[in-house]
Image (tube, rainbow, N blue to C red; front, side, top):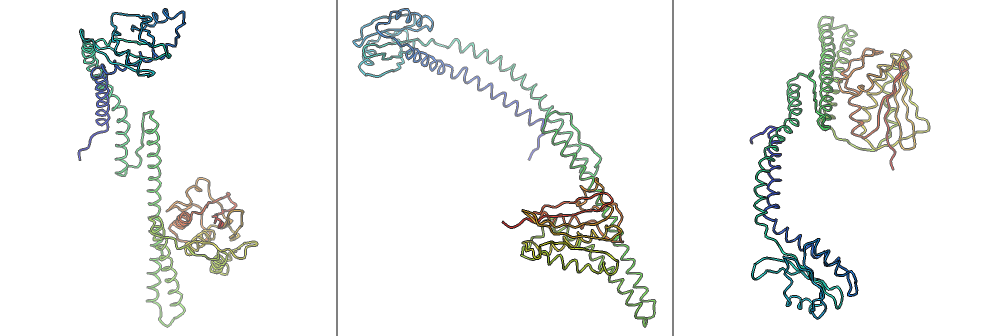
Length: 459
């Protein structure tokens, strides 16, 4: 299919529109002028007949009829029910001589009627409006239809000249309008092509004052900025993943070689080295699972498996599973759920479990020197709020808006050496979106960070 430039399209449409207007004027000024003229004359004399409210005893009757006849250039005849002429005003263009028509109207007992008449000698057309004013008073108003042939010829010549002038002006105006509208879009298109080639420093600019184009430019600049951020975050991800994969692989290789080198009878060393290898494999598996989980959620390949379960019991089990950090590293994990011994919710149990795991692990990674983490479940009027609190250094305000972004990793220091892809909170965010949960994060510098999400109560 042939493609046309926007400027060409706009030019063609404006030119066609101008031509259509000229044709419209031609038809109404030349083709239909006689019809319109007759319709106007008929309407005029009908209106005059209805507006003349007179009686037989009206002392200003003759003056009134003479004035109307003069001002409107019409002939007026006033008769009684016998057809006798009570008064007449005649001009050069009258056709009120037909007694038969008058008698037929009087006998018809109609209120009003309009007649189209033709003079048998001159062949001139005229219109007569007959109106019954009372039982004994009738008025007939007539006006001739002057031939418009000469007038039409003049209008035709005038329209030809006007059409040529208007068409030329329309072409010129259409050209400039098409340029004004298309140039900013052309510039935006060129910038977009550069962006598509990876030149993300290109800026979308427009000098247009058209609101839609300004909004489009701003939206594209926002998109470009987000693409730039995404590209930077992807680079960080590659660096993080490369580092996080390289380290455990190196350790696996090193400890495997140690097993080969050491005395096979030294079972304690073999077990220790094998345990380290298993831990590193588990770490690799966790990295891969994070990447796969985010990919499934973001591509909507992951569907919710809704079921009813006890959230309190689920959190208690997860806290218990993390007691290894309490025993081994001296962490403190406190679960507070005042007056809520059981909380049944309808949600995807595995995904909510993943949320609690990720938020708890994140809190353990970044908590302060007191190594304290608190999980709360608070009941409100319309929902239950799950809160995870750490006592770490907090998050800068500039980072808060990005903390749930994929690939994002806070620059603050971990409390313990944890490997990760920066995908955990992004996975949490997507699970919240799937469940339509309200969520957020609050942080105070050097006082810790609080993550929360809200589960609406069933109606």
